[in-house]
Length: 314
Image 1 (cartoon, rainbow, N blue to C red):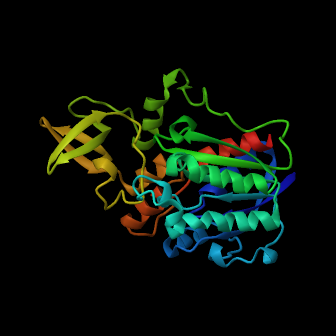
Image 2 (tube, rainbow, N blue to C red):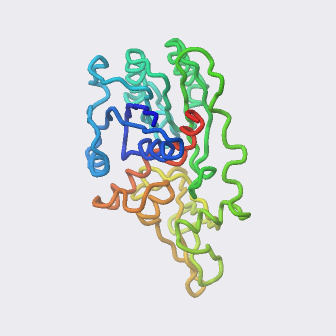
């Protein structure tokens, strides 16, 4: 069996790890984690419950010369500096400069490949100059770089979550690129539209808009106690503030039930949040609901990582 060693940065609760493991099972590749870096104490508790990988702590303090050898670097570097919800401060936000710690490690270690993930807003941040700077740094290190915005609902999970993925190949342009991906992925499953099939996976049965049925939908707050409702079986993007914050633009996906002509709303449960992110049931169990929502809202979707790894290593 072929072995690919990878370094995981900003590891969260292990979305990259799960995606690579799933791809490895299909490809006959043993993806071995050479180490991971994460500083959030709650995410670390979840990560360490599921994995026994070597911890390197804070990315900013890693000395590249002390790292073991690895073939692939994966990182979901902090997205808040480039997102609408996070204020779009970019490199003016200290979290935005963490990309340069990723670059520092890449420059020294020079793994064969890397996979980076961030919000789609990175593309347009600073009129495109931020993304141009990032690609410039990566290409000057000798990487052929490709990228694409992928939506998780096209990869088997009931959530519209657009993220940009950047893939790097050391050396010249490879004979086979990863992107573009996804033109026909997930559009039909056994003849049914993905929206109904994927919704069933979360709620345990057909989504039914009859008066007695429970449905999932988009709630946009217009004024206190006033909502606009749209029935759908794909969630809007789950963010780290789902459990407590008002939501960007007032958008929140809720489940609803019509009870005697009155629409009753509830938040998704933490278990449902895990399912719309493509994680195993109970992955974040043992934490408060607030932390479980937060960990899922900050995570990378494992099935999307799996799809990229399948393209990269097949």
